[in-house]
Length: 339
Image (cartoon, rainbow, N blue to C red; front, top):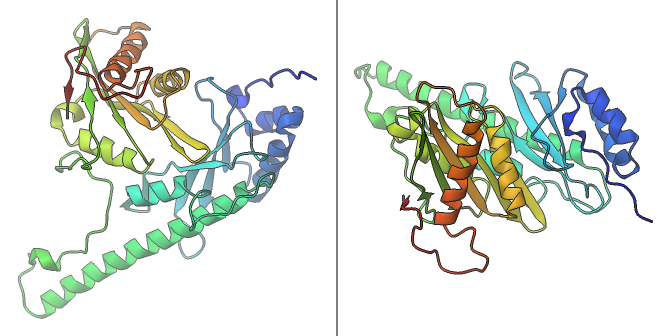
């Protein structure tokens, strides 16, 4: 028997509408029931349906979870993506949306560990056919609380070192060795960031239109945790950081049978979703594509999306990602350069 393809739930405004749509679709009824349970656990205001660029039937919703006492004022946001094959053949995909937990910038290690919740030994064991979003969320919450407590401890250690130095009569300006211990963090644009040694970024020539410029870049990735490192490296370049939209990006990375993916508009509404759609129709995995847009003072209307997509395609072509066969990277056909 041939069944019609279920309509995409991604355009629904409210969680209630999404639940209603899922419960009315036999193939997604299990996911709808689970989402209904999650709503009853976390509350009506904690779950929000995502209206992403409509490229597939993946269910995406965001959950805001408060930390337990004594950290009740800390909240994390997690994006849950459920493929059409969930829960029969694939686990959920979780992504930490919060860039800060309390006063501490989320680092690539925590970001990557959340992405690997269902494929790592420290995560949640997934069983085919079993719903497991709640187990995954609780596992992420526990790890984030531990990460936060570790950072609070490091901060307290730094304060104690400074107090000891003052008591000993040392100057207020302490030796660097006595400063607060450094944990990995999200770098700001003024720091010099080193690109991981195994990453090579391919950069296309700028596309210029009415004084606006669009620069595409692409690189291979082997793990989602590399993404924030690469973006931080690019943002450490002042010329890139001063752009109107420095890092419009999309990426796909396959781990076993699971394809992790995400995108970021970086302030250019729907641009990241369009790049994600481009990677999907090209069937590219293990790749990150970034477009930097410099605004020239003249609004381009829909033309800006055409240039963003073309800049991305140019970078993918320069990197050899569009080759039909697995061959060595070809010379830059459009005059681009490598980082």
